[in-house]
Image (cartoon, rainbow, N blue to C red):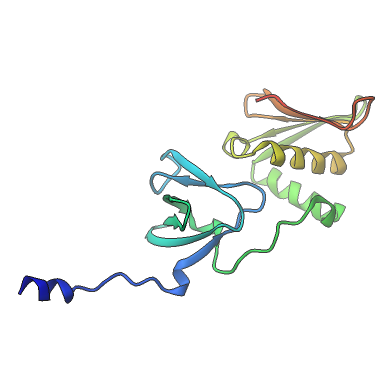
Length: 182
């Protein structure tokens, strides 16, 4: 009898809409132990990674990355139900599009830009929550875009406390030269 009762219980069914893709072209997506930023980061998933959604807690989704052995929580806004296209390369954005992108980051308080035009130095302070998610390639890409936009010969990425974390020198005998000072 208990065997029949067990068979009558509904089984969880995965539908096509439970299958999503990481949509975070600029920064790898944090996968957390629980639903919220107060929970530690388990790992990070790159743009385009397929995931299965297993549970929801407000804006957070519990996911599994098939074949990777990764399980955790992510913010739903970083998932798409269609495979995202490749992120644009720096050369694909026009100067006006790039300016809009940086202005949006400034308005949101993610970055603060300070320029010293006489010395050709651009210093960008970035929120530590964002900066910590940047790998070396992403730091360099960000600094190259800032260099083109602000026309600086030296562009520095700093954390909230003003500590220089990476630097790109675009002019001089050893240019271009990228340094990650983590």
